[in-house]
Image (cartoon, rainbow, N blue to C red):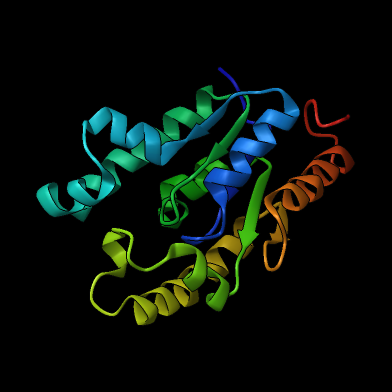
Length: 176
């Protein structure tokens, strides 16, 4: 049974995967992206799970993968953007060092690229992303041990900020 050093949450385009990978490398630990685990377990892309099996099937698989990962991972974990919305996951996150990567709407639009297959942004992607941010931001803020703005920052700068925050809170091997 392990405990991640940091769990990254945030909206699509916040940089959870890229920052998480860099943070794990900096700390010399393993990185787990729960979306990648879900795709591996399902044998298909998340977009395909949504289309072929439905959002409910995806969310249940996500809940199981997130719970397992939070109990076994010892490095850095990145959760999919919607994972933190489930009550069960919110309870699982209690006691973990949760880092909310905050991204402003216009920055998220640029990063998401809106052409990429993102099931929850179907239809009018800009409007869907704006709505998604409005709904999820209060949850992310409430769950966060640390909030790091990703606006106008290079991923390495974001990692610097997180490492400093981990060291200040005495989390794991964050001392350099």
